[in-house]
Image (cartoon, rainbow over all chains, first blue to last red; front, side, top):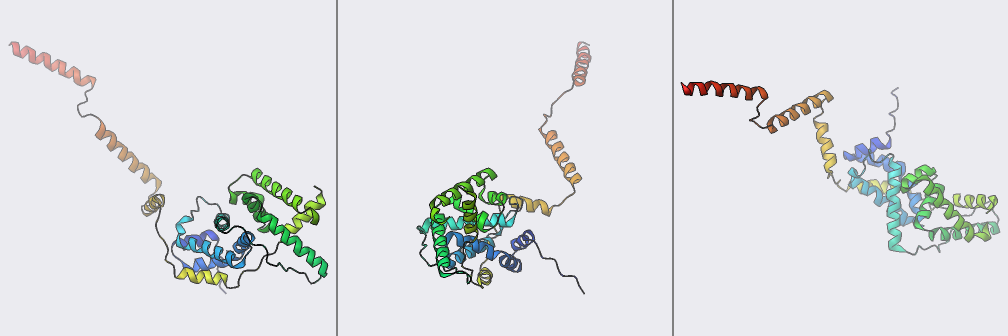
Length: 184
Length: 104
């Protein structure tokens, strides 16, 4: 029985995309769409817009594959996070203020109605407060808490050093704790 | 701020909700890309790299070629009427001999 073909890593796929391979592009998109969508959603709080941003980011990569330069970018995801974050920030500059009035019905079956209500309120308030944080603090929180990046990776995405990133997270959390006193 | 508050905030931050993406999002992106041409403009740096890749020579060949080029440059830029100390001595000797002949 022939051995299974090993999966190509991101860098190999990108090299093939630069040669015009649709198959490699499809593989890369399928591999990473979900994670970049999640990040975009954190910024825009809207499914359609987040999908549009991710689509835009990937199509830019397809149209201008030479933008990826492996010798300058250590990791594809780090580089692409930066692209997605920039697109989200551009979108927010055009579309402020962010609408956060939609209901957020995240209800766990095991929760009582009261608990669920408190939880929804907590989440609404949190999203509202995160939306008004300074841009860099928001990005640091999104990358570290939602995307599960290490501080070092998040610092690379943001182009800052580790201490600066830790300071951004600390300030963001201090502000959030202050503003969410009633819920903590 | 107490540790309890910290932990609670971290927990809330980690449980933030995300509307899941449409199941066909990746497929839509792939289909859309199929109708888009790639922009193949390459930067000067990349063009140079590709050029060198075309003429892939072993390193000693580069060294040999560079030495040859350097030799030509030095050779062509040196003035043609350079004289050495020996040359000027020879001129003097010849001058002396011709002077004698002139007297004769």
